[in-house]
Image (cartoon, rainbow, N blue to C red; front, side):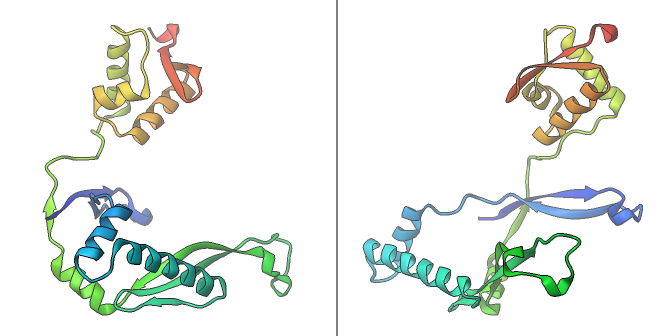
Amino acid sequence: MSIKYEIHSIKNSKGTGKEQEFVRIFEQPPLTDRQLETHIQDNCSLTKGDVQATLMTLRDCMIHALSHGNRFHIPEIGYFSLAVDLDMPSDKPMDKVRGDYISVRNIKFRPDAELLNEVKCNARFERAQFSSKSRQYTEQQLLERIKGYLSVNNCITRRDLEQELGLRQTTALKCLKHFTEMGILKKEGARNSPVYFLNKVYE
Protein backbone atom coordinates (compact mmCIF):
# COMPACT_ATOMS: atom_id res chain seq x y z
CA MET A 1 0.00 0.00 0.00
CA SER A 2 1.31 3.44 -0.94
CA ILE A 3 2.05 6.10 1.66
CA LYS A 4 -0.09 9.19 1.07
CA TYR A 5 1.65 12.56 1.08
CA GLU A 6 1.08 16.24 0.40
CA ILE A 7 3.44 19.15 -0.20
CA HIS A 8 3.62 22.04 2.27
CA SER A 9 5.78 25.15 2.16
CA ILE A 10 7.42 27.51 4.64
CA LYS A 11 7.42 31.15 3.60
CA ASN A 12 10.53 33.21 4.32
CA SER A 13 12.42 30.07 5.34
CA LYS A 14 15.16 30.86 7.87
CA GLY A 15 14.72 34.56 7.13
CA THR A 16 16.00 34.20 3.57
CA GLY A 17 12.82 35.47 1.95
CA LYS A 18 12.59 32.23 -0.02
CA GLU A 19 9.86 29.63 0.14
CA GLN A 20 10.95 26.14 1.19
CA GLU A 21 8.83 23.15 0.28
CA PHE A 22 8.64 19.98 2.36
CA VAL A 23 6.73 16.71 2.29
CA ARG A 24 4.14 15.75 4.90
CA ILE A 25 3.18 12.09 4.97
CA PHE A 26 -0.01 10.68 6.43
CA GLU A 27 1.13 7.95 8.80
CA GLN A 28 -1.18 5.04 9.51
CA PRO A 29 -1.80 3.92 13.11
CA PRO A 30 0.66 1.33 14.47
CA LEU A 31 -0.22 -2.32 14.91
CA THR A 32 -1.99 -3.00 18.18
CA ASP A 33 -0.25 -5.25 20.70
CA ARG A 34 -2.58 -8.11 19.73
CA GLN A 35 -1.96 -7.61 15.99
CA LEU A 36 1.80 -7.62 16.54
CA GLU A 37 1.64 -10.76 18.67
CA THR A 38 -0.51 -12.50 16.06
CA HIS A 39 1.80 -11.46 13.24
CA ILE A 40 4.89 -12.80 15.05
CA GLN A 41 3.13 -16.02 16.04
CA ASP A 42 2.01 -16.61 12.45
CA ASN A 43 5.55 -16.20 11.12
CA CYS A 44 7.55 -18.31 13.59
CA SER A 45 7.13 -21.07 16.18
CA LEU A 46 6.49 -18.75 19.14
CA THR A 47 3.10 -18.68 20.82
CA LYS A 48 1.43 -15.42 21.82
CA GLY A 49 2.50 -16.08 25.41
CA ASP A 50 6.11 -16.50 24.23
CA VAL A 51 5.88 -13.25 22.29
CA GLN A 52 4.50 -11.36 25.28
CA ALA A 53 7.22 -12.71 27.56
CA THR A 54 9.94 -11.89 25.03
CA LEU A 55 8.73 -8.32 24.51
CA MET A 56 8.49 -7.70 28.27
CA THR A 57 11.99 -9.09 28.81
CA LEU A 58 13.31 -6.96 25.94
CA ARG A 59 11.72 -3.92 27.55
CA ASP A 60 13.31 -4.70 30.92
CA CYS A 61 16.73 -5.18 29.29
CA MET A 62 16.38 -1.86 27.46
CA ILE A 63 15.41 0.03 30.62
CA HIS A 64 18.37 -1.44 32.50
CA ALA A 65 20.87 -0.70 29.73
CA LEU A 66 19.75 2.86 28.98
CA SER A 67 19.39 3.74 32.68
CA HIS A 68 23.05 2.78 33.15
CA GLY A 69 24.32 4.82 30.20
CA ASN A 70 24.63 1.98 27.70
CA ARG A 71 23.38 2.08 24.14
CA PHE A 72 20.95 -0.75 23.45
CA HIS A 73 21.13 -2.77 20.23
CA ILE A 74 18.41 -5.03 18.85
CA PRO A 75 19.99 -7.22 16.17
CA GLU A 76 18.74 -6.54 12.63
CA ILE A 77 16.83 -3.48 13.90
CA GLY A 78 19.09 -0.79 15.36
CA TYR A 79 20.51 1.14 18.29
CA PHE A 80 18.73 3.02 21.05
CA SER A 81 20.47 5.71 23.11
CA LEU A 82 19.62 8.61 25.42
CA ALA A 83 19.08 12.26 24.57
CA VAL A 84 19.56 14.47 27.63
CA ASP A 85 18.94 18.06 28.71
CA LEU A 86 20.98 20.35 30.94
CA ASP A 87 18.84 22.57 33.17
CA MET A 88 20.96 24.62 35.54
CA PRO A 89 20.85 28.15 36.98
CA SER A 90 22.30 30.72 34.57
CA ASP A 91 24.67 32.07 37.23
CA LYS A 92 26.29 28.68 37.84
CA PRO A 93 29.78 28.14 36.31
CA MET A 94 30.16 25.08 34.09
CA ASP A 95 32.55 23.39 36.51
CA LYS A 96 29.73 23.38 39.09
CA VAL A 97 27.34 21.27 37.01
CA ARG A 98 25.74 18.58 39.16
CA GLY A 99 24.08 15.36 38.14
CA ASP A 100 20.65 16.58 39.21
CA TYR A 101 20.86 19.35 36.58
CA ILE A 102 20.77 16.69 33.86
CA SER A 103 17.58 14.91 32.80
CA VAL A 104 16.52 12.45 30.12
CA ARG A 105 14.71 14.24 27.29
CA ASN A 106 14.06 11.35 24.94
CA ILE A 107 15.30 8.03 23.56
CA LYS A 108 17.01 8.21 20.17
CA PHE A 109 16.86 5.45 17.59
CA ARG A 110 19.36 4.77 14.80
CA PRO A 111 18.33 1.95 12.47
CA ASP A 112 20.79 -0.63 11.18
CA ALA A 113 21.84 0.15 7.60
CA GLU A 114 20.24 -3.00 6.19
CA LEU A 115 16.89 -2.27 7.85
CA LEU A 116 16.92 1.30 6.56
CA ASN A 117 17.81 0.19 3.04
CA GLU A 118 15.01 -2.39 2.96
CA VAL A 119 12.46 0.19 4.10
CA LYS A 120 13.73 2.59 1.42
CA CYS A 121 13.35 -0.10 -1.25
CA ASN A 122 9.83 -1.10 -0.15
CA ALA A 123 8.28 2.31 0.54
CA ARG A 124 6.03 3.71 -2.20
CA PHE A 125 4.49 7.18 -2.16
CA GLU A 126 1.31 8.56 -3.69
CA ARG A 127 -0.02 12.12 -3.57
CA ALA A 128 -3.08 12.35 -1.32
CA GLN A 129 -6.40 13.22 -2.96
CA PHE A 130 -7.28 15.36 0.07
CA SER A 131 -5.46 18.11 1.94
CA SER A 132 -4.88 18.83 5.62
CA LYS A 133 -3.88 22.43 4.86
CA SER A 134 -6.12 25.34 5.73
CA ARG A 135 -7.65 27.37 2.94
CA GLN A 136 -5.86 30.65 2.41
CA TYR A 137 -7.63 33.90 3.32
CA THR A 138 -6.54 37.48 3.86
CA GLU A 139 -7.40 39.02 7.23
CA GLN A 140 -10.19 41.04 5.59
CA GLN A 141 -11.64 37.96 3.90
CA LEU A 142 -11.64 36.07 7.20
CA LEU A 143 -13.38 38.94 8.95
CA GLU A 144 -16.01 39.21 6.23
CA ARG A 145 -16.71 35.47 6.36
CA ILE A 146 -17.01 35.55 10.16
CA LYS A 147 -19.34 38.56 10.05
CA GLY A 148 -21.39 36.83 7.37
CA TYR A 149 -21.72 33.74 9.56
CA LEU A 150 -22.68 35.80 12.61
CA SER A 151 -25.28 37.72 10.63
CA VAL A 152 -27.40 34.56 10.56
CA ASN A 153 -26.07 32.78 13.67
CA ASN A 154 -25.95 33.98 17.26
CA CYS A 155 -22.35 32.93 17.89
CA ILE A 156 -19.39 31.14 16.30
CA THR A 157 -17.05 28.43 17.60
CA ARG A 158 -13.72 27.01 16.58
CA ARG A 159 -15.49 24.01 15.05
CA ASP A 160 -17.72 26.33 13.02
CA LEU A 161 -14.65 28.00 11.53
CA GLU A 162 -13.14 24.64 10.64
CA GLN A 163 -16.31 23.44 8.91
CA GLU A 164 -17.45 26.67 7.26
CA LEU A 165 -14.07 28.08 6.19
CA GLY A 166 -12.02 24.90 5.75
CA LEU A 167 -9.45 25.83 8.41
CA ARG A 168 -7.31 23.49 10.46
CA GLN A 169 -7.87 23.53 14.23
CA THR A 170 -4.69 25.48 15.05
CA THR A 171 -5.44 28.08 12.35
CA ALA A 172 -9.03 28.48 13.54
CA LEU A 173 -7.87 29.01 17.13
CA LYS A 174 -5.28 31.60 16.05
CA CYS A 175 -7.93 33.39 14.01
CA LEU A 176 -10.38 33.58 16.91
CA LYS A 177 -7.65 34.72 19.30
CA HIS A 178 -6.50 37.41 16.84
CA PHE A 179 -9.95 38.94 16.35
CA THR A 180 -10.70 38.69 20.08
CA GLU A 181 -7.51 40.58 20.93
CA MET A 182 -8.47 43.22 18.34
CA GLY A 183 -11.79 43.66 20.15
CA ILE A 184 -13.86 42.54 17.15
CA LEU A 185 -15.00 39.31 18.81
CA LYS A 186 -16.04 38.72 22.41
CA LYS A 187 -15.23 35.37 24.03
CA GLU A 188 -17.69 33.78 26.44
CA GLY A 189 -18.59 30.37 27.83
CA ALA A 190 -16.57 27.57 29.38
CA ARG A 191 -12.79 27.59 29.00
CA ASN A 192 -12.70 24.24 27.17
CA SER A 193 -15.64 25.07 24.88
CA PRO A 194 -15.85 28.86 24.39
CA VAL A 195 -18.19 30.65 21.99
CA TYR A 196 -17.52 33.95 20.27
CA PHE A 197 -19.86 36.88 19.62
CA LEU A 198 -19.42 39.93 17.43
CA ASN A 199 -18.95 43.07 19.50
CA LYS A 200 -21.89 45.42 18.92
CA VAL A 201 -19.65 48.21 17.66
CA TYR A 202 -18.72 46.02 14.68
CA GLU A 203 -22.23 44.82 13.85
